[in-house]
Structure formats: C-alpha cells, structure tokens
Length: 71
Image: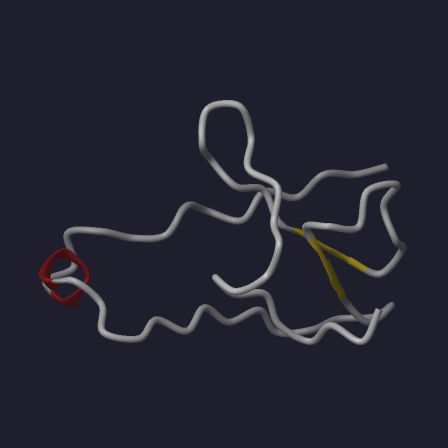
C-alpha cells in the first residue's frame, strides 16, 4: 500500500470508545485502514511528536505501551 507512516491526515478508523488501534505487522490484516506494514524481521518503532503539550515535556504523560499479539 506504499504507506511508511501513519498520521493525523490518514483516514483511520477509531474504536467505539474513541481510542485508536494501529496494527504494525508484516502480513496485511483483513482491514488495512489502520495498518502500518512492517518488515518480516526486526524493526524499530518510533513516535514523533510535534509541539507536544507541557505534560509530555514534564514527563507527566507517556504513550500507551505497545501490545504484542501472537497469531
């Protein structure tokens, strides 16, 4: 799908509670709207934040932990 990043301009599907799940994996899921393709082997995952709020800068907010699901 030639996608190398996911951002606020992408047409992502939110969960019913307003949260967002992003699938970072090699094999395409059945719904690819929130999929970020990854290589078959190891890779580095980065979160880039532009103009973060004070809570981030003071260390009072952290992104949710990455959850690993096995097939």
